[in-house]
Length: 152
Image 1 (spheres, helix red, strand yellow):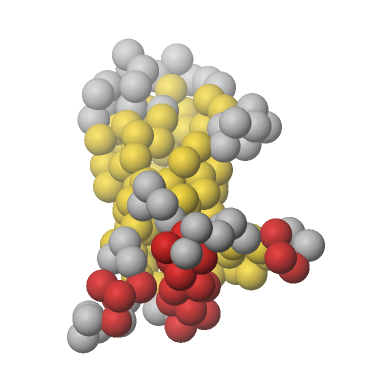
Image 2 (cartoon, rainbow, N blue to C red):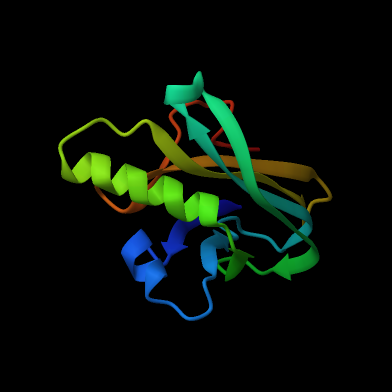
């Protein structure tokens, strides 16, 4: 089981400002990369803002949980975290401003979680992920820490 992609929608604060519904969405695509059916017991995903400027302080944005679904080998499923947050919008705006003025990015939206599943052989396995938003590339980048990005 792998987390294939994570996307932010909308990808900029100015795009968000133009929306009527003022809704953020973080889209995850999970894929059964194994050769047997995977019965997902629980998938917990959370998003938060982490700030180097505040001693690596953390501000929770949202948490979502999905339970009891099955993926056949090669099957992909999109999971969406939907939330409203003016704090998130303000933080993203500050990050975009800093990058556009060739300053350092001090705050990062983060998406992390675990997927616990049962494989066809009866083994319980877990996949963990942690991705942080890079304003310049407009994408979530995987952590290099094996304690955060792993698959049993």
